[in-house]
Length: 543
Image (tube, helix red, strand yellow):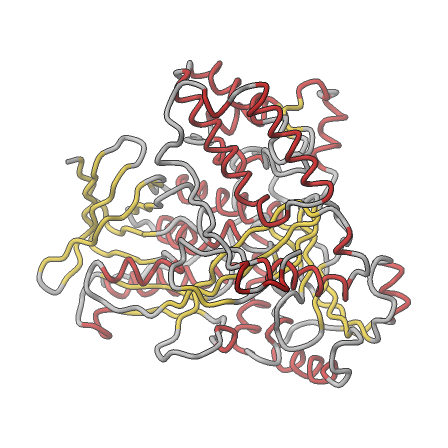
């Protein structure tokens, strides 16, 4: 069995895990990170893309609000290229308590979240598609974040300080000797072999999966998986993040991210973070609530639906996952459970990942009896794919401007997201892609209206050409990606997107015969599909 020795092993390749490994590597620790799929495969890659101002929590969860605004300021400084400075509105619709606005303003003052009330007329000048019956509007410094790029950026920063990032390494069990955790056994999905990693400290940063990781060392960590369902509209109907001005609830936020607008989100407790359904009632509810913000939203073209699970930590169980704090928790298993060499960081928001990493790295230093200062709040993170392009906010027209400047329209592989052949080749070579879905995360391949209809076959052709990929492997990679795209289309198959999917079906199943090409039907790197929804139990919820 292959063996690796390191000082600190970090489990989990989302925002928190990569943040921890970056902080530790920057402080001079020898570090290894393992992730069972590609980076952002879990919650980080399945949220609505909000850079929190903290406004959402100023009334209900002031501690989380304060953490968010502190980190909002820092992230704008260290990774502006991963953010879009959209600003944010909190609006009072006819369905909301008109007095909540005053509580909201006071909450902002109490938590130092910048806030100003603007006129409805000014709001409509900036966002003319919003409901004209909105009675009050407050501006806060929300933004949108590319969590795929941000995680790659942080991982690249860690690599530059010597960290080793091992994707497609699934943890099988923690290794314990007496009352100390000394490492882990992982399964390398690509090489099809087990790997032993020995470490002085093990950090559990697996988010909603943290409880499952701790369980392998006979430790109980009560992380509730709070499922949130989101839908992407095939248009960028707003350029500002829009929240309902009320206590957090389902379907009360609209986020512009790249070329789409995302409405979210539900909050349902699920027993397993890996297996859950997107229920028809959730889709219907999202569209009904979206109509209250943008009249006619539900009649527009939906692009995709997806679900992610929040890691909600609570020592005592509660009935409603919205009653669980969005602040983070650091568990020292030596003081809590008598198990040395093992700590867990869980909870929190994407916006607070750097702060979570800092407190975790501080505790690692304490455990290893050393003092090393954190510098992650000061150092500008690199751009892993475009060196030098890391000092300004992302802008929506950046790819179009680049394409026009280079006159490279003929090199576009994904016209929807304007990803060029050079982008695809870079993701394959420099990004060390193992699947077409890895390329998607790097360059947004197949994330536009055709959902991979025209670019999938081109991308797998480039991969085959570059690396002489065996025909059977190319075919299974093609099928895996088409299945992953199909996964998010199933809940919203009506109207224009149904027509698009019928065209894609004709291309791949009728013309290319993709389901009968040589090779396995699916690989162990393929997607886990959503469970079947309970339509029969909610007959009124069918769209």
